[in-house]
Length: 343
Length: 216
Image (cartoon, rainbow over all chains, first blue to last red; front, top):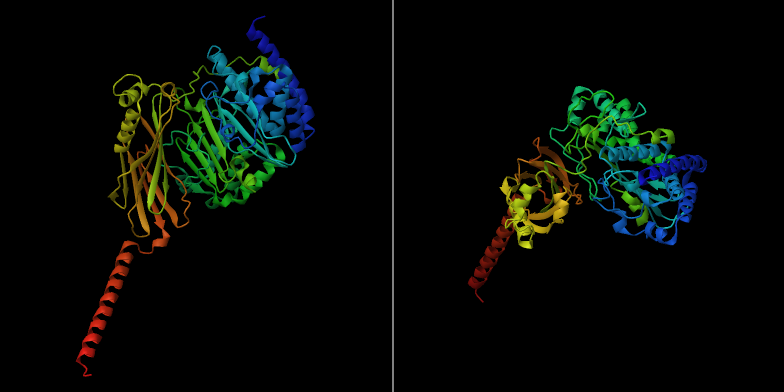
């Protein structure tokens, strides 16, 4: 059996194990379940692996070691999925699933699946694939003290600070390439809702409001992407206080595509915070206002509130921008849980 | 995705190549930050793979495939020379504060980010101010971004922003609330002080001359 087939076999077994373990983990929600999943994962590692996975909570270099780029271009630390045994990998993915909602975990899997397909498409390029996602833990898993789970690779950076019952997902990056693919005839769009809900909101605005939302200039990329921690730019576009109640509900629903990635109880607290500032939240759009149904569009948009920045940026990197999306999700007042750390 | 589906997940609806890096554009992202007497800027320049040879030729002028500190500095100055920054219609002369170059191979892969920081002093003025910024560097291949950070100083408030379509031109109107009517006020106050001082001197002289005339 060649290496590739062995890996595929291992992968299928690992995914099967994940599904079983995820079922068990889902019964135990919130921080105790996350702590158990983290300790269970760490217990599968030998001393050398453990040393590579665990960092000090105040390790700023590791905290900032994330990117949209493939791991061969921007090195990550922690342990790669490809370096783990089947059981270890199952435990790792159980930990990842425990910090996320069901939909959040599904989105993460679809992003990773897209990268795996990219690898297939690129004739087993060493830049892509599900083996190249890294997991690390900053601090000690605890139900009370602060600690952090980092998981990511190409088009994915989840930075989740756990603070008691709270889970802070910012800053995090999601992306997809291809942003549209089929598996056994089923169309998969990892960031489809982020696109469709945004177009629906734009089209729900009347002419004058839409004019305010649409920027008259091109935005070629994320403004507050990786490496841009701690910055707050001047907001632009249409302020949600000028939207009607239905449009504000649509905006909140769109935001939930990011705020709802983290596990349900943390997401509920985060959404309450976002709702509180919704009147001061801005929606800005740059690019075409028409889209082919069932596909992502090529327009950039930004949502910016007192405690929120979301950017959605199709990438014109030599291909169809609608098939290559980068997004960023931040809370400039509390990225990496800094507000809680400061207390 | 379910295991069975994943195992069969080999059908791809698109054959698009997996470019992970910038290709035919030169991304130039500028972030402006305002203080009362100072404007600071940071420019992050990322040449795409396809345009890298052109950018390299502009940096590595002796073509020895090594970028020296002098070449870095000279290129940074050239970028600065392609900028126009003005306040209230008066040109500013930004000075380089720092220059950071990535490794050559990172740039070659479309990943390396050249980082320049500059700043310029702002002359005193009234409360309503207009900053303009124009970037003409490598305009044929540029993808410009320009944004202003929300000022940390509560006395500074951004009023409006305008950009042209490619973001090569940016205009920022802001208010500086603590200066009152600014320069005219300062000038008026100065004149008032001078007049007061002259009056006191005149009065003192008058009093002295009267005293000298009074017989002992």
